[in-house]
Length: 406
Image 1 (cartoon, rainbow, N blue to C red):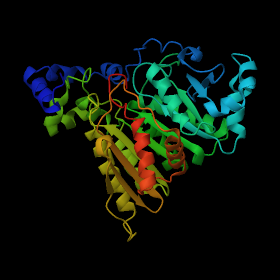
Image 2 (cartoon, rainbow, N blue to C red):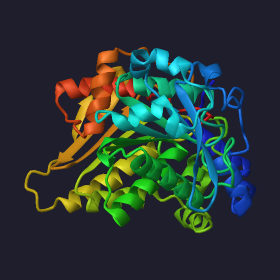
Image 3 (cartoon, rainbow, N blue to C red):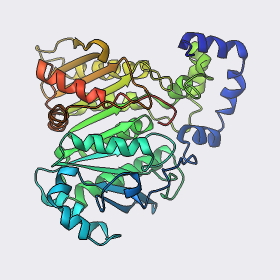
Image 4 (cartoon, rainbow, N blue to C red):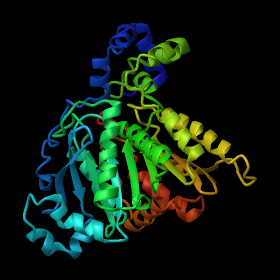
C-alpha cells in the first residue's frame, strides 16, 4: 500500500537512517555510483548489437559508435521511422548487416531528406539504450511523424558498451560528441533537432543545450524534459529508494544542512541555473516540462521548481515587452493540468499528469501524435484548443515518467 510522501519523510526522520546515509553519500565514489547506477544492466538491455530482438525490423536500427574528444567510444543507435522503412523495405532488408553507419540506408535517408527531423534521446540512470521500456519509447516518438522522425539514442560513458566512467563533465562531453555528429556528420541543422531527456537525461539536455546556446549561439528546435530535477543535491534529497523510502528527505527539512550537503556534491548538475540563463540569453527558447504526480521516485515538485525559476528568468528578459502575461492554466481533467507561457520567440510549457504508472502505456491517435511532434519541432506550441489537445496526447505517451528505472 502506498504511503504519502510526508509520512515517508517522517518515518525516515524518526528512524535516523538518513544521518549515516547522508554522510555516506558525501563520499565522491558513492555519489557517482548511486547517482548514475551505470553498473546496473537489466535483461534484455544487453541485446545492444541485436536490436531486432527488441522488436525492431531488420536493419531499421543501425548500431554504431561515436568517439568523444577525450577518446571515449560511445555506443549508439540510429533508428529509422516505420514510414521511411515501409517506403524502402526491400533496400533495408537487402542491406548487409553490420554496415558502417555512413554506408547505412538509414543514415543516407536522414541526411538527404530536407524534411527529416532528428530526436536525440538522453536516457536516465541505470541500464542501456536497449532496455525494454526505452525501446518502446523510441517507437512511440517516431510514430508521431513516421515518415520524418528519426531517433538517435546513445549510452553515456560507463553505460553498456560505452567506454569510460561517468561524471558531469564526461557526460556533457559525450552529449557534445553526439550533437556534433548530428550537426556536422549528418548535417542536420539545429532547427530540425529536438533534445529529449528523461530523469538524469534532463540534466544532460540542459547542460549541452546551455553549452551550445551560450558558447556557440546555437539553439535547437525544442527541449523536452521528462521527470526533471533542479540540481543533484535536490535530486539526492528527493529520491526515494524503490519509489517508497526517501532516505535523504530529512536533509531538505533543514536549509543549513541542505546547503552543507549541496557543497559536497562532486557533480552538481545545476539544471535550474542553466535553464534560467538560456531563458534570459536565447533569442528563441522553447522548453517543455512533463512530470507525473504519481512519480514516487523523483517528485513532481522538482519540475514545478524548474518551471518557476525558468519562467522568472524569461519574464525578466522580456521586461520591455508590454505583452508579457502570466502563464495560461489549462485544466486537462484526469489527464492533469498544463501551464503555458509565451512572449515573442520564447515559450515555456509545463504539464503535470495526474497518472503515470511505470508499466502502463497509452494507445494514442496517430494523427494527434503527428501534429504534436511537428509542433514541438517547429516551436509552435501555443495555448489554443487544437494545440492543447495535441500536447495532451503528447503528455499521455510521456506519462510513464515514474518508477525505479529512470
